[in-house]
Image 1 (cartoon, rainbow, N blue to C red):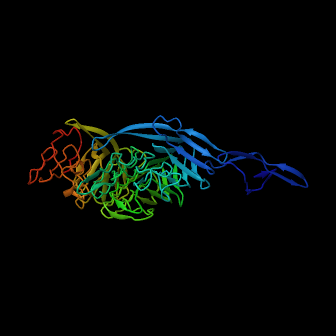
Image 2 (cartoon, rainbow, N blue to C red):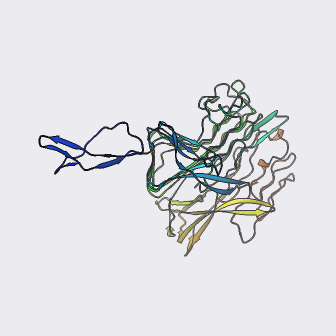
Image 3 (tube, helix red, strand yellow):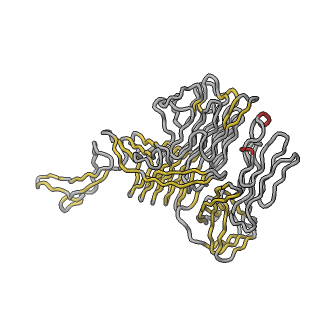
Length: 563
């Protein structure tokens, strides 16, 4: 600060009573025996969104005009901006079709959520996208699990499902968990858990919802199918668990993306949580013929650089009766399955401090099995021009979610496209990831890893020499109940059941997945093998293999089907 011809240096002043996000003007004066002098005018702007309560409402559908960002600084809530909607159709690996809507909130300058906010509320059924042309700083936590006014149990949410002991009260929660922020409700979604029961078993139990990780089967109901891709090009949340004996099931976690043109910082102590819901059971009876829990949701972070000093969570809900919030008896028998883990994606060109992330599947309880772990994807933000890749050693990883990396530090971006394959009246969605190079030479000392759910194309403008193994092999299932994991572009096997002998003949979850999936367990018959160009085996006892599909030209770049 200058007064007259003299520079007085910086002046520290303590101010109070200021509003957040407002510009203030000031002048300084100084008085001595020679008189009074004034500084030139200056101004400063207080940080936006650093007091009161913010509410992001993503709307109840893709046309909801009430959707928007609302701010209450203490004198009543007012609308800061409207939401802009974008909708895409997602065709899942099993051919089911889902309309996915995202509510977009764009800020033309820096976006800051300050620590002095009372809270940030996230509401609505659509996924949430926050983008900024500047830097983004999160100093306040974001939770994708809306809380009812007076929950049945402490810290209960609307994503949780409550069994019949609890009355259905909209102020306290629901028997069927409600989907929010792009997550699907109980019994809903591409990866919804399944219900199954029989007279001999005495009732229904539900499997856990799946996403990146497969949901755990319940006492009889199988988990759902995996879906989506690690890069989260389509921003969608987790799926709900299968229904229990009295219609209870939990919802999947929501979906949020935060896009910064510059730096994205998540401050210490901040939690961004898109966890799946859990089934809260009868405290006097425990997890008895109960529904499945929801899978974890999705968190997508895009920036030039990312620093996460907080915690990111997209974990599956625990098996019914296992949740830490349970007030009473946790387990007798026939528990529902836990939800599978969700997806977290970092798309960043510069420095990445990944910090603490959690995409675990939910925990098991008795015969309600655990969910499998979800995915964490790291890839470039910006497209890359084709480069010459000449390697003699090290490990080269192709992640068909859209990135390649080498232990030398070299890396690049892939382009993912989605297509539809139709066969015998059925349609199946699939993705293809293309990696482009000028020249490609992989020596025998290079270890190549291919992972991800999409098929892979290596597009080389010049010469290509592969002197090492490049494999996209499928893997066997685990414990006889979890599906086998396919190679890139393939389909998984069928999922097993805990109580197959008592649950009749076929259940669709037992069939191998894909256009040529083999037929699953049927009393007195063996399981059928998957087919593609060749027909799978029917096994020793006249099982039914899958049908052949595709053509010799490989018009559709799709993998094999599960048994």
